[in-house]
Amino acid sequence: MDVLRAPILWLTVERSSVDGRSCRDYVAYGNDGARLGSARAFPWRREIPLHFAPALDLSALILRRRRSFPLTGKVDVLDMSAHRRIGVVSRSGRYRDAHGRAAGAFRDARTLGDLAKEGLFQTAMEMLLGGESGSTGSGPTGFVHIVAGKPAGTLGRAALPFPTSASAERPESPGLLRKLLPRRLDNALFNPVPRGWKLQSTAADVHDPRLRLAAALFAVELSHW
Image 1 (cartoon, rainbow, N blue to C red):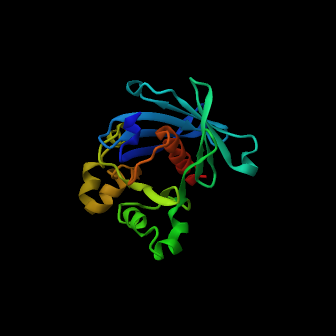
Image 2: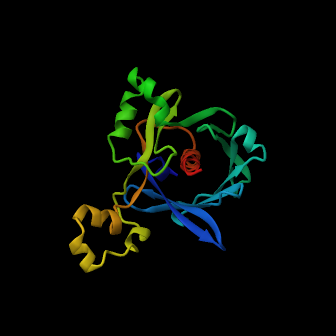
Image 3: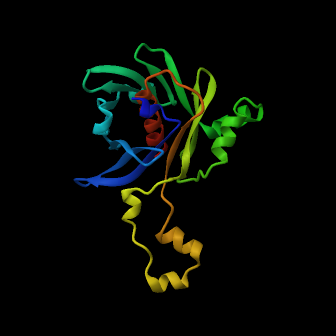
C-alpha cells in the first residue's frame, strides 16, 4: 500500500460508452507511469468500482452513493474483500475514516482566494496555480488537499510526464495540413499534450491511502457533473 502514499500520483479520465451508455474511465498512475488502478463511472449508477493493479495485491473498493445522497451528499467507500467500510466521502470534498473521524478534504481552489490572501494557503495555492492547470469546463480545475485544517497537497490538472495508451492512439495530422497550420495550432488539434489530474502531497498522511485516492477520484468525478 506504500505505493499509494507516494508524493505524486496521477488520475486520467476519458469519456467512453458501454452498450450505448456514456461513462467516464479513470486510470490511476504512479509518477513513473506505472498503472496502479482503474475505475468506471456511470452518472446514473450509484456505484463506482475501483480496481487496483494485481501487483499491488490490494482489495478493490466500491464508492457507493447512499440513497440519501441528494440530501446528504455522502458516499460510502467499501472494501470489497473485507466487506467493510473504510470511510465516507462527502460531496463537499470532506472525507472521514471508518470510525467517523475527519481524515481530510479536497477544497475547490477557487473558494480559497480570500484565505490565500491571508497567507494560510499561500504555499498550496502557488503550487497549484504555478503548474500547468487548465480549464476544461465550468467545474473546478484544481483543489487544495486539507488535512487537520492545514494544506497537505494539491489536486490539479497538469501535463502528464509519461505517455498513455490513449495518447499513443491519437493520429498525427495529415502531412499537407501540417504544412499549412502553424505549429502550435497543429499540436493543439492533432497532437495535444496528454493531461491528467496530479495528486501531489506535501505532508505525511497517516490515514488509509486508498481512502485519499477514492476521495480524489470522487472530487474529479464531481467536477464533471
